[in-house]
Image 1: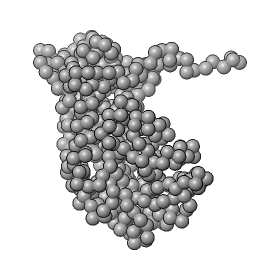
Image 2 (image 1 turned 90 degrees about the vertical axis):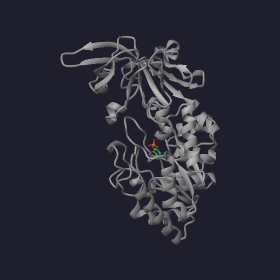
Image 3 (image 1 turned 60 degrees about the horizontal axis):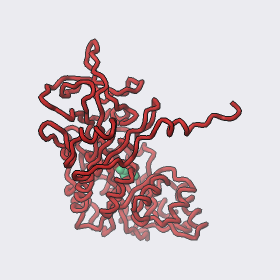
Image 4 (image 1 turned 180 degrees about the horizontal axis):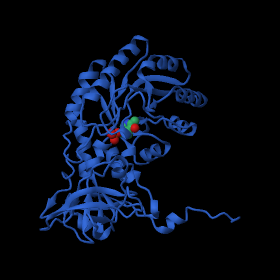
Length: 420
Ligand SMILES: *Cc1c(COP(=O)(O)O)cnc(C)c1O
């Protein structure tokens, strides 16, 4: 799936399914996120088909896009959820994902969150440290329940991705070092209220090369064999997420190639496989649509100033991420070179420098591609800008799936103390 697969131009006009983006923009003011439910279904089905020969459960990483309409789309297809907070558990359950398809990751789960997950009866806790394990044991015992757990193992491999989204090196905060894994499992087996069932690994995000996965999974397979020899009944391997997407021209291994690799490295263990894809399910199923506010002729460069900013899509400022920027109506315009910037009072509010975009005027619509994952979920109302609404399209229908709040909604959350 490329950035434009589900957002093609027909007669120079960008479409999503059977609807022109400009028709949506007439009813929903810019900026807004736009998701293709057809694209979400297609990428989920790619995973299902690729893993059809294995006992595998796709648990969508909710943090990539937690909109209820997105989660309900995936729930209907049979997807589970990988969650990292009580809020995400609540979102998953509310959208129809059953508790027995929920795996719970995250480095600092609170007592309240663990309590909630235990009462629901989730599929698995992915435990990131010994103190967390002790807390889970304590809460489970007090509830007279058993928590099914896997340790998140830090395999000490380099994911060859951006430093801020690499998680599997020894210096990262995530997981139990592989060298200490056998001791950790031994402690877990001795604790009340704990059932050891699996091993979990997640080495990073936006991986474009399968070699780090192969290295990590090989180490995990060796560990599973050792743990079984130690007497642990390991039945589940959670292989995490992290498969990348094409933002510009990255060549991403197919999901089938990835599935084959999982089978080669882990198949002989006869474990249930849990997958936690986020970006690779949603990234290219959504775009951020904005309008040109002004075209400014600077001394050295031309600026395309958009009505969307870093508060709407933070990836370019936070990770130096590349997103294709495309005129919704290309018309007969020529390409020009622009710095594409937002309205927020920060120099970092820059989507692209020296980028070729079709010549644009104030009011023209601009699409920031590949924004379906880690877009809306990371947005904020910095500069007291209203959170961009989200729209979902299927065929010739579209719906607003999150409304734009009003200024009153935002301001009324603050409280002026009576003693002021
Ligand atoms: C973020 C995360 C994922 C999803 O990663 P993607 O790169 O979006 O596929 C999966 N598992 C865990 C534990 C995560 O933290």
